[in-house]
Image (cartoon, rainbow, N blue to C red; front, side, top):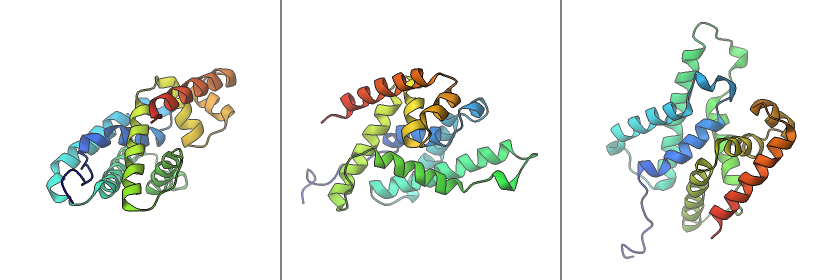
Length: 185
C-alpha cells in the first residue's frame, strides 16, 4: 500500500465543527447565555492539543476520544451551574445523550456502512455534514438541530426558538435545501 492509498489522517481542528454541533445539540437554547457551546469546544480542543501525544489511533478512535472529552467538559460546566441547586432527578447521563446526538447526526447520512473503508467514508461525510451545518445561518441551523437531530416536534421547535410554526417550517425548508446543495457529490 502506497502513501497515496492510505486514508488521510485528520487533524484535531478537522473535528471542531463536529464537536461544536454536538455541544449545541446538548445545550438548551434558553440557558445558552450561561453555557456557551463554543467555550466548551474550545476547552475540549485545548485539552486535546495538550494530550495529543498520548493518542494513537485512527480517525474513528480520535472522534470517540474527542467526544468523551467533550462529554467531560459539558458535564463539568453543567455541574458548575447546579452547584448550589443540584437536583439528582433532573440529571441524565450526558454520555448517553451525546451518543444519541452523534447517532442522530450519523443517521442523517443515507447509508449504514461497516467495512473500514466505508467507515472512513462515513466519518468523512459526518464531518462534512457538521461543517455544512455550522455554515448555515443560526436560525436554520438551530431549527434543523432541534427538529431533525434532537427529535423535537415542529411545535416544540417553534416554542424553543420563540417563533411560529410557519416560520420554523420555512427555516427547515431553506436549511435542508442548502444542506442538500452543499452535501451533493
